[in-house]
Amino acid sequence: MSSTSSSPAELSDATHHGGWVIIISAIFMVLLMLCLAIRAYVRTTYSTIAGSPDHVLAVAGVVGIIQTAVVFWEVSIGLGTSIELLSTATVHQLQKSWFASAVLYLLALWLAKCCVLFVYLQLTPNKRHNLISWSVIGFNTVWVFISILMIGVDCELNTPWSHLASRCTGLFARWQVITAVDIITELVIFALSIYLVIGLQMPAKRKAVIVVAFGLRLFVIVPSIFRLHYVSKYINSSNPTLALSNVAIWTEVQMHTSIIACVSYCFKSFTAAVSTNYGATAINIEVYDSTNNRTGFTRGGGYGPNSRIQNSNSGGSQGPFVGHIGGQNRTTVTTGNKRLSSQTSNDSQKVIILDEIRVEQG
Image (cartoon, rainbow, N blue to C red):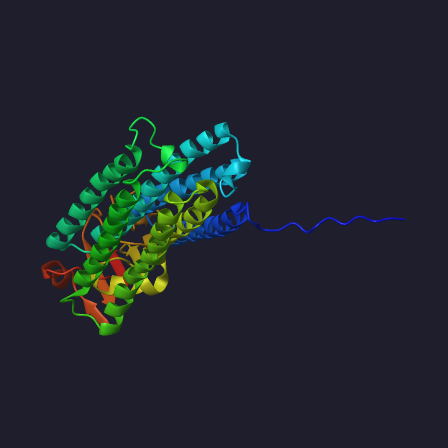
């Protein structure tokens, strides 16, 4: 009785590299979804109002997931497969979808940068710092559209995706400019974190926590350089559909890492350090009436002063932190072992972080 055996399936071979694209893209997409879930859990647990960074992060996450889904589809039709195994129609289809995924990639990077800058805007009242942050946001917004035009207006103008099967001498230079500006803006964003803590009356250890947290974003520069390296090989390759797999891998690594880096600012060690000087977290705020019954409360957390008091009765109107309550009230601020009166806190020219607030109606 004769028996036949088939060769074991391989992750990749000389003509198929799409398997690695699928695996690495899936890993990073799962990490992204996990981090977004952590961010949502932190928001829900601490009962805080979602701010601009959360909204931008959510949109960036959606764009990143859609971009990865497009890459999965591209692998299914031929990305990472040797071009001689593909039909002309399939190559044209892959060309168009790859251009679409490149646009989504650029949009995701832009949103990730904006997320960090909106974190800055919620952490400090410094007008000069905020002006610089808004300027960087404006520049990045204009630049992302310029970048899309740079890769969209190709050698033949009407077919921006044609470089996948033909040569375009200026395309690599365009990606060099896009990558260079991307790296420069990341360095500027990091420099803003240093400017954020300069001159603050706080321990050096806490300053280091803030700078390191923002400095972690600099790691996204590494995959961007690798991506540019493989873009050069892919553009000059005689087998572009196969060479495109390495570009796709580093595109996914850079994009997802950039978005995931935005989630690190919700972790306790970071928010605790920032809240010491910027009002990022009100840990516990309680409102009491004249009979010592609690009428409202809030728990802090998140990027900035977005907490609100939840009133348990219908009397009074309460805004962020401690709002107006009908009748006379007395505020006691406890921070560490010090107790500050309302007059002391009102006269202060700096933001005061509240570890515990008790508001009593007289």
